[in-house]
Length: 355
Image (cartoon, rainbow, N blue to C red; front, top):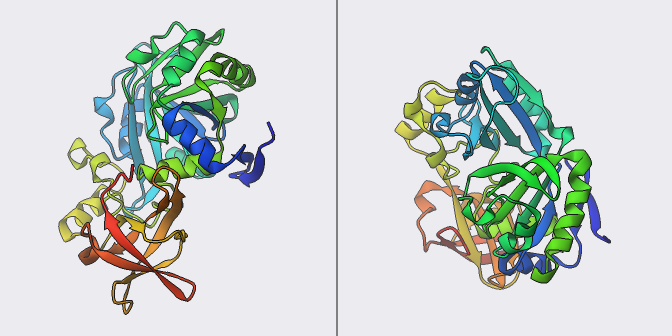
């Protein structure tokens, strides 16, 4: 479709089809489609599937019923993050009725690392399957997503609550999982199907959504959309060196649920208090802050942190960013300076989300 392509996590990915701004605003106001088949999917199934997923993730898997989705992370033994992920409680197909089954959706660049990590901690009566290469995934995002897609399925799309899913027939294919999730904060769905059917499903979606002005969108718009909502990006805002507490993800860490990997470090971090915090900021002018730029105090004398993500917000029409700063500087309204080469850019800490 004439996209500008670039390598990403071992895939050749569309960065943009038209312009990032046009694709971004079309998703915010209408409906756009991302091919995110590069994401990783693991199935965890068996008698003790719950025990394994509960042990390697930070959130409380006990709260999940079939049809529920949960945002979570896999902490390491030092309280950092192996990866952030989605945990799906899916119906068990095959095996015993008493078995539980989960689908873990992980970041493309972390598939091998995550697979090795989960298997290394699998001391349970359970099986793990890597279905990443067999699974196609399309994210149809935006406020017009229901109108664009409803003619393709008997699943009542408008009834699927945020972070829930249903399985059914979609675009003529059976056993398609339709999930009210996404990485844009604009509403919409993620559609999981067999990789061999995903191209036909893509074509059907564009045909069905023509009246709603449906357009493809690339990695560029995906990044600007998620940043406007303050969603963390692995390798930027979170990593094996950042704890969920300092990243503002304490809400997905349930320390009362029982034992899990990294629990003692996280408890210590909560007790001792954090030294730094992920914050959000807006900038005066039009210069965009980049990952790695140093953050200084307002008087430009002391470096207090570092930028992890930055972009020009198409919705707000000014630059926005996130980064870690010393905890004493984390208050909303604090004036900071960001060093870009020899220049200092004026910025102000704000509350998330930006949009």
